[in-house]
Image (cartoon, rainbow, N blue to C red; front, side, top):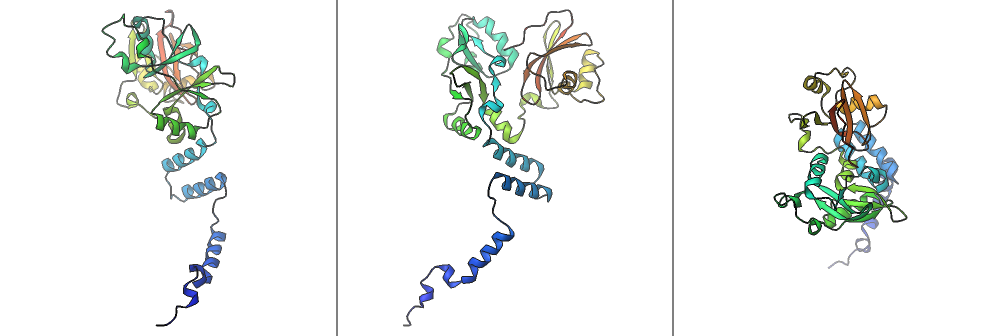
Amino acid sequence: MPEPNSSDTGPRSAKHPNKSLFARFLSFVHPEPADREDIKAVLDAAHDRHVLDGESYAMIAGALDVVNQTVADIMVPHSKMDMLDIAKPLTELLPEIIESGHSRFPVYETDRDNIVGLLLAKDLLLSIANPSLDLHPLIRPAVFIPETKRLNILLHDFRSSHNHLAIVIDEHGGTSGLVTMEDVLEQIVGDIEDEYDDDNETTIFKTGDNSWRAMGITEIDDFNREFQTDLPHEDYDTLGGWLAAELERIPHRGDSITRSGLNFTVVGADAKRVLWLHVQKAGNEPPPPAL
């Protein structure tokens, strides 16, 4: 039997000395990304060459950006949080819950800075038949996180703990705001529409004799037809877009204007757009915006 060739016992590169040279040549022609800016440059090139479609490009770029963002960048500030006072009876809380449309609420006791937990709207389903029910046993523990927490870490924590909402605290331990899993995911995939956002669904809901709740995505033509108004529609498609133009900025919760005999009050908004508006005939005192 012939003795094995010594070259066969060495590493693969010893058998093919030109391979490492070829690999270095490829890395010179197509260098590996050294940082996130290089990765984005590769993504830009792939998008320009139609290797990635617009949606895929936006999602990958969003995932990269999340690493550099903190909770403070996207949280709902404390002054605009929808919260429930545990001292109020259920009969008073239900209108607030329905008006906001949220599924989870921070609950405070005595003072808005004293958050004692969270209340889930679904937990109230069995309680509606008993308005005098004590809500304390329904309160769930709240999760508290710092403003500086990075979004990629928060998303991992949300997934592992099965929580969907966290209370944000500042460096002194005070409440800064809140953030939800949806807020984080929207930084990656864009705005997440819920079941009310279907174009075929109603976007205007009557809430009283002279009051309505309208979604920011309501088409201005539809709104004008419903209310016999003449809001301009040449430059804007939606009610939220029109309001942003009127205010010359992205509207915030609590903003209010009167046009065409109607009071418009923002009761829901995020960092990019109006989500919900309370509409009431002028002359009727509009309710204070939910905080």
